[in-house]
Length: 539
Image (tube, rainbow, N blue to C red; front, top):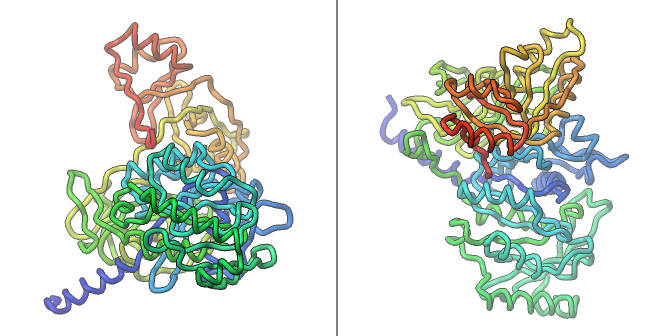
């Protein structure tokens, strides 16, 4: 039996490790530079020696966080990956998210696993629809947000105009920690704001070839900056004073409460301002905290081990047909090989094959702490939203599914591939790539896929071909929306024109409607039928 002294020492070490962790995600509209920023952060943490710059462009490398062939070809992120690295005294867990709006559901899952978010905004375009939607998810989950205005090396809008847009459109008060010296397209460096908006320091950046390496920094006093940059510095200093007069100075309590957002101007492509982003995350972002459990309680970080699965992914390593479940550790210390309990089945689960993941690169992890993201190999029983624990049972709330808006049937083009087809469908379903619907009429040979965005179908067909060597035929269906129903209502709904009833893999009975007018008509004519909106995550 452990002595009280040994137990206290273990608790103190656990608390110290928790305090070192910073776990965050980057959210943005497509093409705001999210994957480029992810790689720039890894470069500054010295995890890689050279950035890949614009991924997907001819002759250029793809970013380390984009591993799927489809991602490399198109220059977009359609899956979430996890990068862990040390920076200073801290351990950073950066969970990269899909960059396309069709994969909102995957991004939502990621946001259930982080303690803070970086909202990336294009300096020329400002707030865009996907950014607004994801910000609302972060707000609903109580996740504090740090704002990065990216691409300041290109022509764009005025710095204060962008700040006003953030305040006006989402009600979040921006509190810049740094202001750009030089207009958008003429990015010279950053003014560091001090107490009451005072210009305390000038950080000047020097470009490197293609932005492939860390941009050298030179630090100057305000007086030296004025002499060096003249009017550009004066403008930035005046803007800082105006912001202070409007009460837009950083307040840590208001930031953690989700009322304000520290702002940094940057160019991920040139690696300008990237160090300042990392330093801000370490200084201001919260360490892992207690998590709510089913039943209304909270799981403290110092309690025995528990974790939540937020992502399942196969095909990351073409040499090994394995399945990787990403778990966010919520409490306690994780040790590879420990036997934990799977809350959803009550069965034991051995953690012999546990990995940290850096893009496509893997390394075995022996110990991990709250806030860390660990990959469990061949975790066939695990799905997003599941809980693992030791000691007394704990279960975290399930992760809601988005309401699908696109529907299609999928079948193998040749009958001899049916076995592989079924295996692949089950795999992609359990990963949450799409929702799989079935009924007796269509049978298992031609299931219906339900998706938030049509690009999810492209991922399915590409992975069917690439990972399972199954060529498929996809046929879109004339349905536009789904409603949850029950067994009693299903029989009547199945008789209605423009309606088809299915069972989802999780047992939910869904009725698909050709359009909203058909739904409204049936609701009016048959008001006693059960027709409930699906939980839509960010809606």
